[in-house]
Length: 382
Image (cartoon, rainbow, N blue to C red; front, side):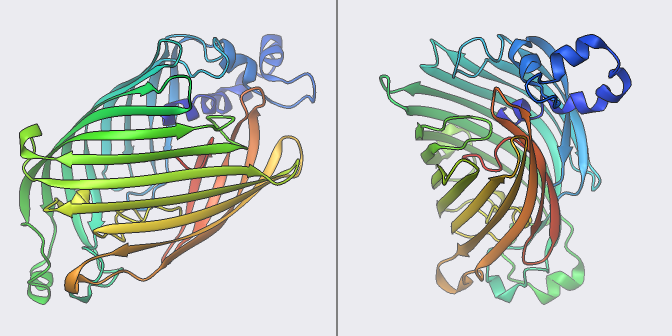
């Protein structure tokens, strides 16, 4: 849901060249203080329905796009420092046949003392499965094609603890999947112990989760100062409607520090652990720019990233980033190598009153170079 907010301004780029002569557009989208294009006034006053384009650049599923229809229940700037309640429906597809359709709601209630997030969706995901790191020496570039049709439900509610920046909450997630592996006969002969649960199989996962969040960021879009952190415990169990019993633990932290008036240092750390008999898609993976989703999976993953943002003008910034991650497994399954990623990007301050930046990143991972369209922060808590 938070990503929907990040795409709101992008629709303007599609239509401005055709109506730039209109005086109302100049008054709304040009900042009189510097004469640059700026969406602050429009976003702060906008309420009601808005079509928003979706751009997908994930290398694991290819390039693609779609559209979301977003409804603002109140104005973005109605209450300073408090995000608006938003509902949305969306559909998207990529060049490899992956598609998704769904809807959700973000509710900010009781003057931001209660936050609710809910969503329902269905889709088809086409990717490669690389196995747990080290299984039978499977190489990182020797993945097996798979397709997963899924129906997904999520319900989450969080409560602010007093007037502090802490939120405590509970969530329920449910996924009903039909999975197909496109494993060739020669691959089966070469790798008879690949630990794949079957060429075709169904799997249901259902979990109750407890979480504790902390957030002191100065800006929910493109932070320049503050900390956001989350600790989550997920209990996947047959009693909640799933097929397997296992647990997943996660901890994430984002820290932003201004070094001077033009430099901001961002740091990210993330750790996840899974215990029990889990389906292949539930195992954590190294999640960084330049690394394919699910390419480096394990019973435990650790990663750290740094990002330096330099505002060389009041509107434009350059970004340099890099990170490292590793997937761990017990027994003879083995661990992955340390996975490195690095890259450069550029940002434009598209909404100065909201501190919202947009731009493009080019990231180099262990195998590929990928392009990412960024709206707001490059990172979010899982």
